[in-house]
Amino acid sequence: MNTIAIVGGGLGGLLTAAEFKRRGAEPIVLEASDRPGGVAQTVVEDGFLLEPAASSMLLPKPDLSPILDAAGAQVTPATEAAKTRYVYTRGRLIEINESPAALLAPIVSVRGKLRAAAEPFVKHPAEAPEESLLDFLSRRFGPEMGRLGATLMAHGVFAADPADLSARGAFPAMVDLDDEAGSIIRGVLRRRKERPKPASPKVRASVHVPVGGMAGLARTLADYLGTAFVPNTPVKYVKPSGTGWVVETEGDSVTADMVVLAVPPHQARSITPPDVAEALDGTQVAPVVVVGIGAPASDLPLPEGFGVLVGPDSGFRTLGVLFESAYAPGRAPEGFALAKGIFGGSADPAAFDLADDALVELLTEETSRIVGTPVRPTWSKTVRTFPGIPQYRIGHAAWLRRLDEALGAHPGLHVAGWGYRGIGVSGLAKEANRLATLWEQQAERT
Image (tube, rainbow, N blue to C red; front, top):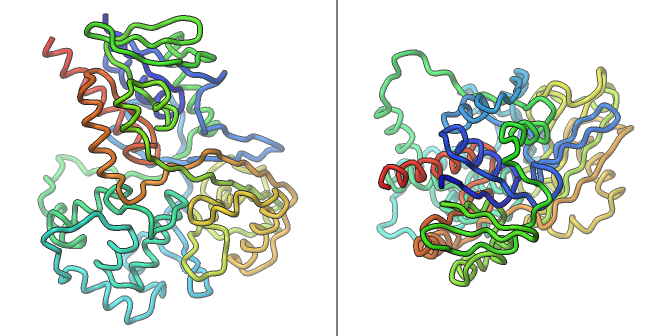
């Protein structure tokens, strides 16, 4: 037997299954709904293409690119506009691009910049407790730059309150730099110095978008899996059986060497052994609302860029606005523009309860302030995601350790997906690679 049962056919489960298949295993994906993709359900309407969840990915990536190539996924590079980002803070729209000149952007005061520049000289505590993202960045870069950076990162990735979000849980690579070098800046410089020079010039990752949207990517991955993708198959529970596992569904059962629970913790909790279910308890999610507005480009004059994140004290309820048609080909009809706003999360939970019309009006008004001229949408769409985005709050790293200990008592049982170790398509692919490597190592031992 060489079967891997994957519970959940969202992007996490699909990427994991595709990586297993690419390496010669026999995965089977058990999906409760009638279609693949989970929250990646692209809305295509009146010539507009709106993504209610992730809308792009960075490529090439060592974990993600081989999976997409094996599955035959079609992706297209974003336009040059994707290299330009904006911040709305201090009452103005400020461009942040990839050039060194971005350091001169007036995102904070001169005093705030001088304090941030002193980051390499800030002592690293002997025993650093788990800090919130806000406390961590404020300690490293000072209160002004720290608050701005923490707000943008928390809103942009998790729709979260930076005072609640765990720095180590949500952005472990950044905290690792501080642990290793006593400074984020010194850590970056050290890694660059130690990195071996490639034999050929390295291709820098850039923004790409899947043809047909994320839902199209999900269908491509499901097609690659063929009959191994099984929709309309809710899982009742998983239990150990001999040296393997039995996955019990409503109408049948699957016997497997390995089981990957590619579902959110609250769903995995209901189908796992009691000790694992107990370890899965305590996670939190926050519902979000995505609002799209479209119009002739003259009535929705978007800046050339990827989008804008909104800083603290702006008075905005929109956490960020993506300029979808400015960077992503095919997101709007010819001559039209499309913007996408994000509301809610733990940053502003009350926004989830606002009526659709009120949210469209909010996005229209706040986008008008951002671009500096009234916008007049002729098309709109509101998509609510419930229960929503996982919140990696303070204690998340310790929770993961407890979960790993519980899973360690059940060889062959694993978890995957954005509820655990990272949000984003690249993060899901990295976890798929880790699990497939574990499977190969176990196969070699047996």
